[in-house]
Image (cartoon, rainbow over all chains, first blue to last red; front, side):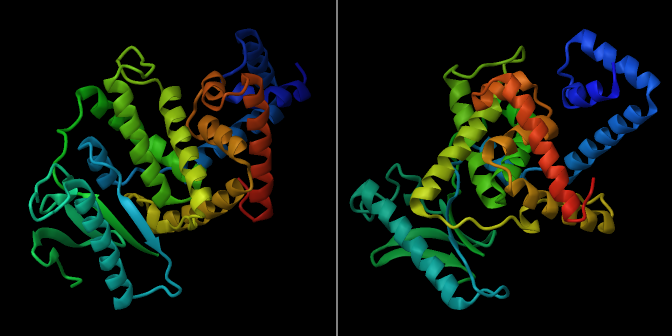
Length: 156
Length: 190
């Protein structure tokens, strides 16, 4: 085997995708050719760095939600022009959107939410909905009253 | 970015069967890593991984998943589900003209045991690699991630992407070459 042959097969060799006889030919060439040996070592090193660079674990709360069989978050994202402290109007807007979503769900599933607050819909169950802003849980829906939905939390 | 999320926090079904728990233990990290690099959006990767695992759970429950000797879906089936879920999200996002935000460090859990300077080094390299990956089309990116990073066989990747194994080899080669060139150009030779 020549050096050019090995270079042509290098990716498949590194991936363990060559047939046995071709792998054996590459191994024999590498045992005798220092330049190709360096090339292979460099390729392994590059792969290790790529893997280390892209390494990471899934967030723990994602793992918990999946194992508990919870549905994915229904997420609405707002872009802020300036980073920094959350402005109050954005938080109020978020709370308003949440209220619309929750009430919409409750009304659409149960008809009159006041008659059937437990109604088989998770959204109609007190404590079943949380408001999460930037990953921080700020409040939770606690109950349905005559004049609407009660949201409790530090943002109100 | 401000994120508003509504989540059912009440109890739903009990924790999945033993097989599903083992599947999550075995594959969630790799699927999440793959999706984060494929989609270049940690929040979206999270949503897609979540949905993909619920699909996998349903497939396991209904006996639709191709399983290995331990009764867990084979890696090719898991990654095919993850990629198909991602493609569905992207199609829906295009329809809605959803704004996709660039990946930032906040989407990644930093390991506590790594020294700070190494983390900084890794974050810089990560940004460069992410930018280089962004210049590959989706198929080349998937081939590269599934083979080079996740170590799947060409035949498995061919099944996931519905292309011949020979095409996997050539696309992997081109993707790796292009990434190397782009990283060298940005001063991050590997």
